[in-house]
Image 1 (tube, rainbow, N blue to C red):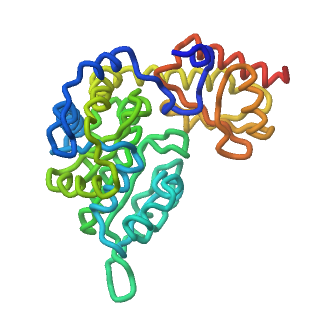
Image 2: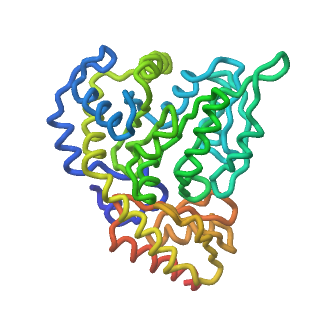
Length: 347
């Protein structure tokens, strides 16, 4: 690891992790084929493992979470259908209009309480297709919810969403980029969350520490159809087993340690919560993220922290986002706390 990576406390995102030594070794020793031709044994192994973890029949290895989400939308819907998404969802805000461009769907947004939609709100927005109105054919859920602070959707809500969808003959897709964080927070298997949805997409390249890749999981028939969309969108990769090897390490070695990220997030929030000019909504500190309201411009805090070797993001005018991950140990946690104390004291 270059010196600057050793020295920096990079809390911008959990996407910044470097592969572990075990991942590098797995890449070197991975048996390879051609995944577009369907014969890369390491990709096949990863997809079977992902399907097993989520309780689904099959899985598809894709380059990114955005691609996985958009393949799901395109496979579930037809042009002109309506989909329901939470108003601050990643699918809506951070995938550059892909639902409209790729799937040609109408996107209807719903309010939430810290990323958790009320079932009755969803029920009110479900529409049957008629001569004037597009039918609502897909509900999208984000768990954990990024912009709400890494918050978790309770299992009772997931079950209620599934019940609404069944009655309305609507499908449910879970943008589970960090669903393993949600499962860790709830102390359940990921399959207990995924049982309430038709499809789930999760990222290997966030808290699970892989350099690249996501898995889209669902029924065998769905994944067969999704494979065409992956090819259509340019996501077919050849000797993809090099990357899939890291994913296997992620799913077998990197899940249990997510609890450490959650612990460190709470520890930092606790340590800085009384600093002048800092406010933390404790209801949102549920997983590996800490969102902080600051009285000075967020960009100013980012600049000052960076001078002290701590990297953060300012997603709003007076907001900081800090994300814990596998490359942040207890020593780096303490360095981050000390940097915040210095900035808070005006040093």
